[in-house]
Structures are given as structure tokens and as C-alpha cells.
Amino acid sequence: MWSENRLKETLEEETLAVGSCVYSNSPALIELMGHCGLDFCRIDNEHSWRRDESAESMVRAAVISGVVPLLRIDHDKDVIRKALEIGAGGILIPHVITPEEVEDVVSAAKFPPRGIRGMGSLNFSGRWGTVGAKDFIRWSDEEQLVGVMIEDIRAMEHVDEIMAVDGLDYVLFGASDFSVSIGHPGESSHYKVMEALRETVKAADRNGVYVCKGVGYPWVENARKFVEMGCHMIELGHDATILRTIWSRKGEEIRGLR
Image (cartoon, rainbow, N blue to C red):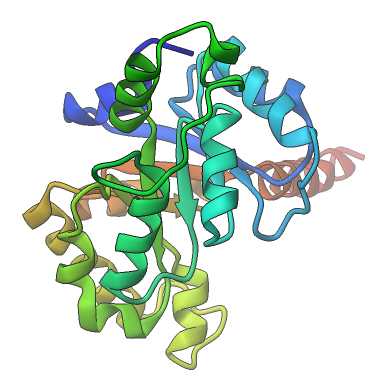
């Protein structure tokens, strides 16, 4: 837990970070991600219901196997604090539109003087109070990442100001919701979506922020264009979509043998 954040190190070394997303509640699946060498796993708490000890079990599984757990959670200062206390390597807040919202997220995630986070080390991150307050605060402020999602056309009006907020480490570009916001739901490759992604990458580069982009099947071919565009993190589908693709395609191929 108290080592340097592996994902942060990877990004600072300008090496492409590769991860995936989990919608199920399986700690074993997250352990497998780590043993497969993935850099991060996004544990979804927006569209998956995980308001009990299952989140803690999944974070522990990530720590055991060496993959960095990123928790997507609601924009709520208490939820942000608790996500960091149970050991998230980073948080991710969806549907951010203004720099003021980003400032509020950073403030909730950081201890004073940068933020307003309350001190409490009787948790997994704090080693249950066995380390000093100064060391815990320094480690958390430096190693636990803060991220937001760019997934609304309205956010593009403020994209440079969003990226300029001190303490923001990365953004995940949500092409699906962005397509909805421009009136083309489901068209995640629409030219307006891709233009917004390019502008997001440019603004991020100007401010030292990393950009993550999820990819669907065919994974490598789709990832290539986003890497060439300048994205720093590639999220390789979701557990549900990967299994859906493999089971559907390979099942049909096997049926075709007879």
C-alpha cells in the first residue's frame, strides 16, 4: 500500500499505461488483472451498485496483485474521502463540466492546506493508525491520483481551465456520454466526438494532465488511433464487454465447425 503509485510512475516515465474496467463484484477477477500485468483497473461505482464491503475487497485484491485500483464514484466529498481511505490508487468523478467542480473534487481529496479532507488514519490506507499523521498525509496527497471525466459538450467550453486546476492528475474521455450530449447517442466515433477528444488531449498536454481513453473490439486496432492521437492511458474494455465479445464470437465459430 505504501509504495509509490505504480500507475503514476508509469505515466511519469512516459510509458503507455494499459488497464481495464470491472463492472462485476469479483475480487478474483481483479487479482487476475494484476497477475496479467495490467497497470490499472477501474472499479465502477457509477453504473454498478457497490456501497458495501465489496469495494474494500476489490481494492485489497488490486493491492495484492499489484494493479492500481481507480474508483469511479459520485461527486460527494464524503464518498471521495472514503474511497481514498479504503485504498483507492485514484478516484474518478464523472460528468464534470466546470473548473469549479474540479476544484471541489481536488479540495475534497487533499488534506489542508491544499484541500479540506478530514484526517483519519484508522483505515486500510492509513495502516490502521500505525503510522504518523505527517507520513500518511504526505503519502496520500502525493500518491493517490485525482481524475475526472470529460463527457459533455459543455465541458469543452472550459477544457483548458479544467486541466489547469492544481491537483488534477488525469481525465477519462467518455465518448459514449459525449455522443449523447451532442445529440448523436451511440455514435462514439462521430467526428464531433473525435474533435473534442483531440482538443482534450491538447489541453491536457499543455497542463501536464494525462488522458485515458477506453477502447472496444477490435481492441488493438482501436487503441492504435488513440495512442497516435496522444492518449496516455488505454482502458481495454470492461469485463462484461470482453466476455460478451469472446463468448459470442467464439461460440458462433465453434458452432460453425459442424
